[in-house]
Image (tube, rainbow, N blue to C red; front, side, top):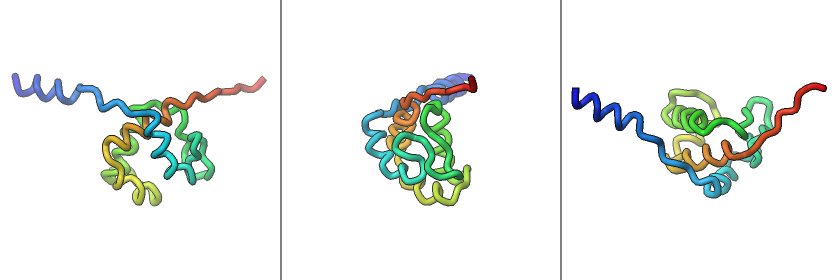
Length: 103
């Protein structure tokens, strides 16, 4: 039972907080598809601005491990460190978006 408590505590520990400023620098390599502002420049690339940080971290980790597949991301993601992933996620999540509805 004690081993379960230790595993649970480790599993629920917060992930490393990313650095928004460092993420902006690292996002330069992403801008061809996703734009520096996180707004996709290609129809097949998703918008990243305003996405929640945990989602972005999970998606990048899955691209890195191959659990999630995408031709371009399979080239880029394996080279990302955990710090790179945290920084990129922090940067894109920090970009404020405005949702404009129909009048």
